[in-house]
Image 1: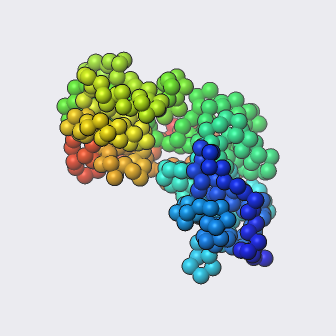
Image 2: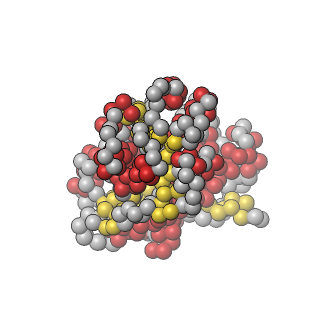
Image 3: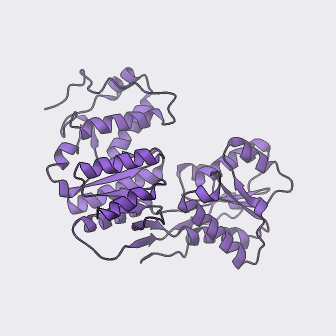
Length: 380
């Protein structure tokens, strides 16, 4: 049965413009819930772009971002003549609960998570499984709620980009419930892991700066302190320190910068003396630093060389030298590993490290073709 566009099921949603989540994210999650609850059955059509724009008072771009997210999650297909058609949902998946896996992300506002989702969908298609997605919004309570909801609903296992609740995963392990960490892991709760060798990759990008002759190099992250930072940030800091040590360069504690607000970036670029180069924990940090440098009249790379990590979409626009992660492959391999666990694979815990790529652009002062870093690509 097709859902009438005029009735607009789910129209009771009121977008919260004070919410930290973007409007397209709120819209995406609302309609994902309606699909998973069976309000929109497989084969039915979502409302038109115009109907959604008028009902929620948003732009066409906002609507299209939300629909694109649903499409990337494998829940809908946008067809030229039929509109946006639901192609997957909980009703279909619960008929074969052993083929249903959950995926919990902090959010899906960046290309990294969206590409992981595409990899998960590819693995599901390969093995005849299905995936449903949930979001923690960087909250331990929401993360636990989403994971346990999936477990209670009969999902056969979960993939999680974890926040900071090792007790949750210790509980899952004690209950022999399959889970796989994506991108980062919690040392206090061992589990299968698929991601990259952040230490080696950060060593490589820092070494690249050092070989270009930059004598003073800082490390910037966006956390209040390294102790409470995600494991990825701590590992990238370790790679930075290792590269300095290998090159015989001293480490100055003054050049470990916690940039928790815009003022911190402005203060850093305004320092005198200032280090000649900066390793940023991720590209979002690097972009904020580049913007602060531009506003302060600090030239990149002549006055300050900058490198990042992740190769998000704005990186190319800012000519940012960065480390690219194989995000789709991470999702593919993580889903394959989880599906094998749900099928009874009881081999020792795996730590799969996939190769990264150093993308050299103008922000480091050396323009050349991208090259591959020598990083670990292993299972152990």
